[in-house]
Image 1: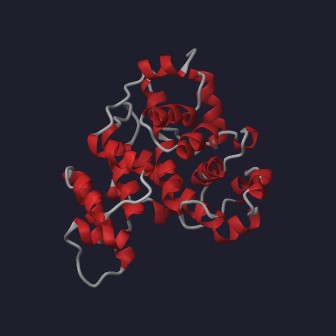
Image 2: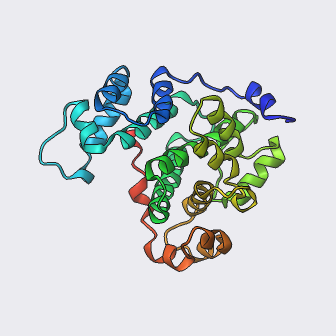
Length: 266
């Protein structure tokens, strides 16, 4: 591929759902009201059901069930509901290439998103924005896979670096760069576009984008088994230090990836 424009023409880029378009445009608004979110989300029954399931998740420990969008948004918060709703729209818009397991793919995406949120909280970034960016990253892999004659998920875990290198060798761009172009065309916030664009080599980016570094580390962690010292040691120490954390802290407090892989919300 000579350009991302050519790649976008070759890939089957889905049409952005109206609900998702309105939610993405709301990032530009300094103030949002529950009534606006309710009115937008209620137009899509699938998204509505996902938000209600999330509000009724055992994680929130509610003594009674949540049956209205107003209540769900009040409990979860507007930012979390927005990112969840956009993720649902995206998951329903992208068709996985033949041979790519939906369950495996979305479990991997949820791990990346979960680690991105965890790291974002640790370094003072917006955790919901980081979670959504983590969800979006591997959708670039889907678009790249659609251009291959026999796209399959890897038989064994591979490090993000090796996968990104392979993608660049195949089509000239890695999954982050591909999704950055999609996010740009769909008018996502510039912070998300830049994080996707730079995540494969965040230290080379000028200016340095902390969210890109978080996404790089989250993708690395999502490929590792819990307590996998070899993978943890392979994480770029200069990038970890640049974020103000360290490898030992990650190893000590690394969350269980199983806590991130509830794909029923998608």
